[in-house]
Length: 92
Image (cartoon, rainbow, N blue to C red):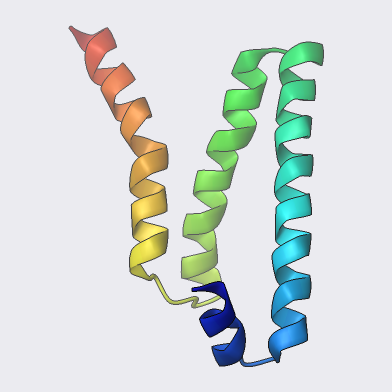
């Protein structure tokens, strides 16, 4: 599937692989940073930062007119679902 996507990538095959590698590296930095925030600060602060990512994805759709595709909707749903369950559990 990856070679097929690389061939269909608008900016070229080599640019696709560069973007793929940098994306993987940046995700590693994100997870190391999240662990560092939990270790140095608290898990509550880490949760607040991760929740800010949810808000950021929504604001990008509103202000930059980015297409709201199925993948973005499923990611927002997966990020928001545990918070909704926790809220419902605390109400009971």
